[in-house]
Image (cartoon, rainbow, N blue to C red):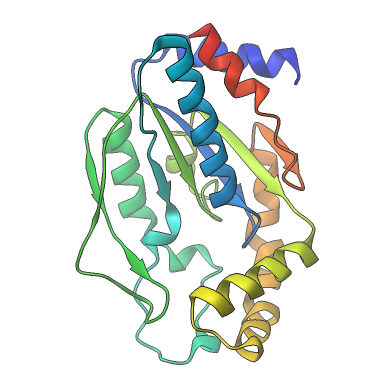
Length: 221
């Protein structure tokens, strides 16, 4: 891993007075959640080994901030535009937890496309991971992120993953998945999400994430 990137991490995390927020952005089904979980596990293990302290790093999923849809036709729901996300609420929650407060975030139901009555409690820690397709879109949110990672994955791989996910866990038919993908997901990706690459600190190609950088952060800290 590039030494300049390592030094960038060191300078920020050592001198920070607020939470260090790692942001993961990328297209639909690019592996953001899986990468977030791996980063979380990697850093937690290193902290436990170095300081004998058990830490539970929270992961905030931007998907929970989708607005509620009243239209029952799945194929007419465009989740791949920034207007589909409550960016204001997400920003205020991220600002609050970065300052050291605990937060209650919405819990989104992707089967009926509404927010559930219950919320998810997120406890503040020194390190926080957030992920979402529009994470780098809003400058207010972008400015709160300590380090920005963009996952750049082959389109056919993202489509394959999306088919599996939506079919298995979101009660969608293959026909509906493909209609929505080619009507909204694919064109919106190149309109809104692909340009966000240039706002990242590092671009990870096809999930080839080097975890040594996170080990070095913990060792240095």
